[in-house]
Image (cartoon, rainbow, N blue to C red; front, top):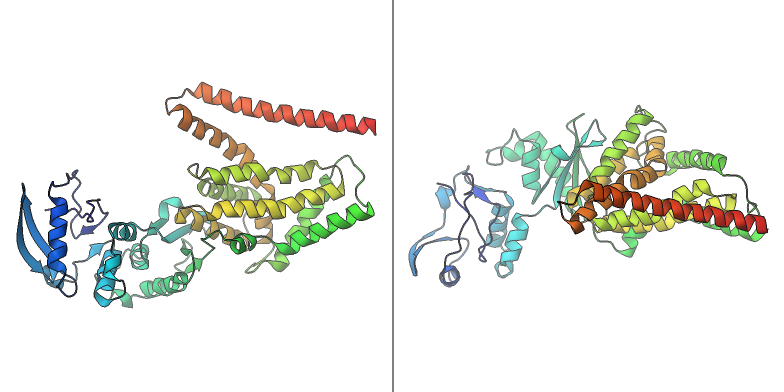
Length: 422
C-alpha cells in the first residue's frame, strides 16, 4: 500500500515513508477542513509528537487511535527526505515552536534546496548531472555516500559520513551552504558566497586595488594630458595590461597555486563555456540583461584610441560591470546555480593564467556570441508562443544584429567626421 503526504492545506508534499509515494491524483475530501479541526482539537492536550488516525467517508469522521510509536520506532522507519524526521524531533524537543508549524513552513522545509552538493569533474568541470540540492545536510551526506544508509546503526561512525558532516557544520555558519566534491579524490570542501545582495556583499566582489589604481591613473593622465593623444589602436597596451593582470593575480589571489595549470588554452575555454552555460539560466533574465549592458566595456577597451581611454574602459569594467553583474548573480534564487558558479570560479582562481582567460578574454564572446542569441530566441518564444516559426525567430535575431551593426557604423562615421574637423 502506497501513501501520500499533504499539509493541512492539502498541498502534496514530496515525502515518503519506506514505500514509494502514491502517484495518483488526490481529490481533496469535502470535509477535509473539518478533519483538520478535529485533529487540532484532539492534539491540544497531548504531550510530544503523536499520530492521530481518522477514518473519513462521505460526511462522517470516525476516530481510530493515537499512535505514539509508528512501527515501534523501527530503525528502518524514517521519512525521506530525512529533514522531516529532524522537523519532528525539533518540535518534540522545543527546538522549534509548534505554533510556527504553518502549512507553508512545513512545505518549504521538506521541499528545501538550501544545501547543495556540486560535483567538479577532473577537479574543475561543473557536472549538473552529478550535482543536486537537498533540504538538509543529512540528506546531502547520505546521497553523497550512497553506500551507507541513514538508517544503519553505525551511520554516524562511517569515516566518509563523518567527514561530510564536519564540512557541513562549517558550511552551516555561512549564508550559502555549498559542499563541493571531485571525481579525482574523496575529499569534500565547502565554498561560500553572500546570499543576501547587500551593498557590502556586492562591493566585496570589486577588486579595489585594481579599481583605485585605474581611477587615479585616469585622473592623473587627464590632468597632465598624458596618454590622451589618439592613436591607431591600443592592441599592444591591451596585451601588456593582461600580462600585468596575470602577474597581479598570481601575487594577490588567495589560494592561488601557480601561474599555469596543466590544462591547455582550449580546455580552459571549453571548461569556462560549459560553466557559463549552466550558471546563466534563461529563466533569470536579470543576469543576461546585466551582462549585455556591461560586457561591452571590455570590447570598448580593445577599440579605444588612447591610453587614457583604454584605462577608463577598464575602470568601468572593474567597477560598474563587477557590481551590477554580481548583484544580479546574488539575487539568483536557485542555490544550486549559485553554488556551481562559486565552486567553478574558486577552482579557476587556483591558477592565475586560467582565471585571466575566464575573467577577461572569453567572457565577452560568451555573452554576445552565445547568451544574446539564446536570450532573444528564448524570450521571443515566450512572448510569441512555443509554436513560433524558427524563421521568425531568426529574422528577429538578424534584425537585432543589423541594428547593432548600423549603430556601430554611425559611431565610426561620427568619429571620422570629428577627426577631420579637428
